[in-house]
Image (cartoon, rainbow, N blue to C red):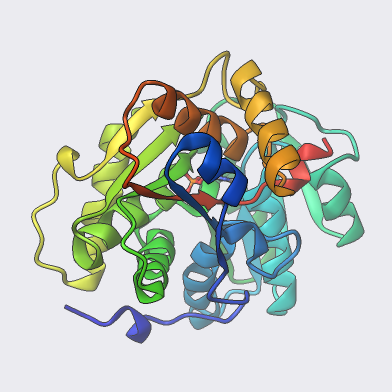
Length: 312
Ligand SMILES: Cc1ncc(COP(=O)(O)O)c(C=O)c1O
């Protein structure tokens, strides 16, 4: 197996991120609850994408890319962070976003405006249209370009969260469960593969905030990332657990998600977001109410960021 540190990476964030015990939530839930503060990854407003981008933009740099394309919805945290990271590394980001969600100069749109990013919208529901448009624009510009898929969720990006598991393991706390939001799959797949390799007693639970076939997506990303690492592991759908927290739809705030945002704000001074982390924490709360945990459990919630979305 290849050492993950031997795979090319660029430094974009501040790691390791803190792991904090949520004292008030622990008391309320009757078990030890911790948060991994990946909302404090140290670039822009923080968030999970910084870990993926350290691998993806290293490949872009090594390929000699001058322009970096990515996509997502109008308020994509991933797109905003990709733009910040590309600029920091001296490359030109071009965001071709789906004309879906809040396109006005609020939330991540405001941040992109402040960074002077080239943002374009396409009125389509199909990312394939956007990837074709990236090629068209890239060829028209005549400069070497690199395309990052929606959410940075390919095998290489997934390695960011395999590496995160090593960070968690090195903390030495025997977490029984790790919980995160699942939007395009890379974060969950990386955590589940990392746990299989480095924390095999820990269960990884993904809270789905969209309607894609995440069981297949997660397993496929895990297998592809394992292949890059040359890891000889047999992966199955039993290596992770998923729960549907999408409610009315992707990026449509839910009552439970909003309650979770208020709960963490009031009890811990931590701000979740309405699209990902609020719904993910609501899934955790629901499982607590269903009696899914023991008083001896130690649960780590991955706060994947998303602050920009709170202001959209
Ligand atoms: C704040 C936040 N949390 C969680 C996620 C989900 O991560 P992933 O796309 O890797 O499933 C995203 C990305 O879309 C995000 O922006």
